[in-house]
Amino acid sequence: MARPRDERPAGAPAGPGPRVSAAAVLPLAIFWSTIDRSLILPLIPQLAEDLDAPLAVAANAVTLHALAYALLQVMWGPLSTRWGRIRVLTVSTALAAVANLLVALSPDIVVLLIARTASGGAFAAMFAAVLTYFGDTLPLERRPAAMANLATATALGLAAGTVIAGAATQWVSWQVLFVVYAVVTALLAVLIAVLPEARDDGAAPLRMQLRQLMRNRWALVVCAVTGLEGVLLIGLYNMLPVALQQAGGGAAVSGFVTAAFGVAVVVVSQLMKLVVHRVAPLWFLVAGGGCAVLAFVLLATQITPLSVLVGATGMGAGWALAHTTLQTWMTDAAAQTRALGMTMFSISLMLGGSLGALAGAAAVAAESFPLLFAAAALASAVFGGTAALGRLRYRVRGD
Image (cartoon, rainbow, N blue to C red; front, side, top):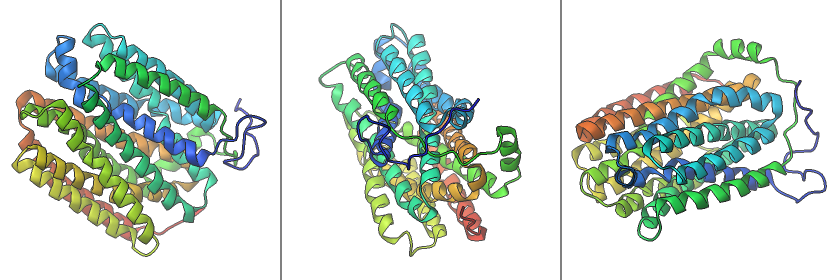
């Protein structure tokens, strides 16, 4: 039986406990969960050395995390409808804290890979539940600004993770880093637990929602282009620190230059807020695809600290322009099945991310990053053009 939902407005205090705003806590949760994804990126060579494992095997910590993040949403999505968004976020965040503690205590590469997979699976609940929560509680005209804030939180998490990990290797061990991360994650779970639940407007049974979603061609189109975006701007971005270190760069340098992705997302997403109501969404998709094309063309020609800095900046700008637009599009396209729709959206993104990371791991073994980035430039043009054409033909439904 579904858990009863309270009838307080979103953002209201949950009973006599602390007054906590969902508008502040949930972007913070997105930020912190994104750090989990990026924290390990500059550490892969160090993990391989400390745990006596081949570099290509250690790189699977990125692939397995992304794959679990994608696939476990199949479980968390229905649970968020049954239990409520906040309960699912609380439980999943607590599990992520345990998984990251296990990362810190890993005696060998096998345990570490299992722990990273568990962490990705736990945080798999985060993004879709937060998107659905805001979709449930905000009118359509306020969602673009909320999505821009989430994009900013994601970008800051990506930047913070790579910078912290890259810098921390100079002063503390990666084990200490993950212990601290686990403790703060546990505290975040407590903070989420006191948030008010969104109102239940009587969602249809899951099987009916799934049939409805599978007949929704626009939702399927958005998921398809989002999957390609995940390959390019999550999976391949995640491999930039490894590519640079394979070319001779250090962990600290690779962490700092790839953090330019996050800085670009923050700047561009905030600028988007100023013009989002005056510029047609398709132009954001065209511009996002174009930025990705330029970034990958540069990376295909050379892999140096400067080229990775500029390439990561272009990828970040592309993410801010395109992903925010796709998120808002999906909240409208799947308005009648929003919880399941946003789950499928996030699954598509992270499945694409895991495929991109898998391609990147293969490039590590073959030392063929230039060829991979050249193919990515072509795929970016397909992504931008297809997404823009679809958005041009789409007509807003609203709620």
